[in-house]
Length: 213
Image (cartoon, rainbow, N blue to C red; front, top):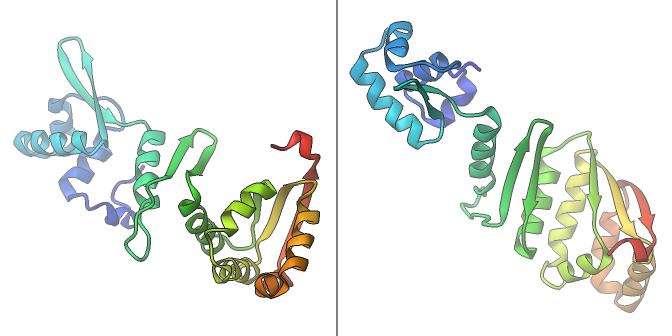
């Protein structure tokens, strides 16, 4: 990994810290870091302490000596995405949102109703020309509607349409029947939401209720 890449400037690393990170791609002692980087021993020792506290570097023992190396890439990715996922454009934080990284990729866990709509908004805003898989039981959707105003759902649906996103959805079998009844019971309440679905592309699969809790 090239820590001098300009896209990483947002991390706020100093030039010395970047040089050290580029040096410890394999475990090294302080003397080896100094020799390879050309930095002063004092500067290396100071920056190593900062990088360890920030989680960029891990320590281990080579005999009686300490060696320094980069943290596991997945650990770094997890920490960075967790920090990013807690920042909202309006300065709000999402305490329930976490990103878990593995060798096969990343995924987000959003805990609580307050997390769901911000998650929907990020999905709609950050993806274009993609298929997005969504799994939701109708009971969960009904609980969401109690706390989320219809205009928010309309905004989400419009963003899905604008960015040419296809929703690859999984629903419980009775969901469509429930939707029809709710629309019939209060057409005015659901009018804007239904209209916003008009040009949205979706590919839904349904499962029998007894298999979908």
